[in-house]
Image (cartoon, rainbow, N blue to C red):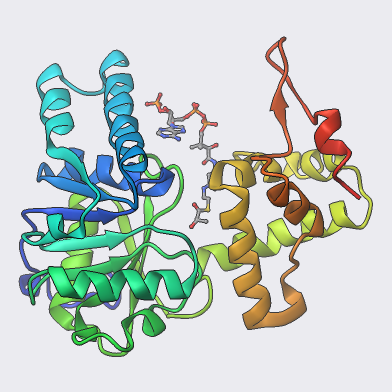
Length: 303
Ligand code: 3HC
């Protein structure tokens, strides 16, 4: 059955090579997914060689983990590893059919990336964004070919989370949208078409929950209490564990986008900002006995 809003799959274009802009956590997980499921070459780029190398190394180590668990055959492991390469130059996308950006969550950065991509890709190449909260329409504006832009938003951890939010900008071509839906299916993900509104659907709901937890925390409820009070709801992860996995700066940017769009319905946490400013990756740190604690140095930053 055709997903709601998806154009006829016959319009979809073949994808023989994928580009991923960025080699951070989300980008590396995407590169692995594309190589493993589509079995096509995937090239990742970033601003310097160490970042590129780190992204490629992440993919290799995740493939090794799958191999060790018996989830992938030795042949498939070798093939997947060989498919993923890195480059510091976007010229590597010259023969790609689909390029997805997963760079820093800031509109001007993403717009610059898309403008640079237009200079190197083929006229038919689809430009996708993994943005979690920014306007896909604004990213397409100003491009020579805005009809090739589509939102394609995955969730962390990419290998496990089944959903992709597909976002149509006003000028997105039917063939581009059809390709996005067929691609999601090939990646074994469920695609849903969502409106181009701040944080789409999933993060709007998630950030309401996270916002209330961080507001309680900012108002003086101890972090341990704020984090564990939701256990009876059966969440797969506690809120602060999830925030650390997503990355505190990303979580904060999504909260800021939603606050800008919807005002006080969305809380931007001062405590979370204090942790980000201090370069702390999450509230909890592992203890020697396998548990977790909020280190005294972290606690000293909280108000
Ligand atoms: N990468 C790859 N695989 C992972 C993984 C990761 N980071 N984390 C867990 N997995 C795999 C495990 O290897 C395991 O696979 P296996 O069955 O083949 O061994 C499977 O997932 C289950 O993992 P665990 O048994 O270790 O742990 P859980 O059952 O607790 O599940 C979880 C882990 C799936 C991460 C679960 O805790 C969960 O669903 N958490 C919530 C995640 C969530 O809400 N994500 C959305 C965040 S918002 C977002 O990403 C949007 C962004 O744009 C801001």
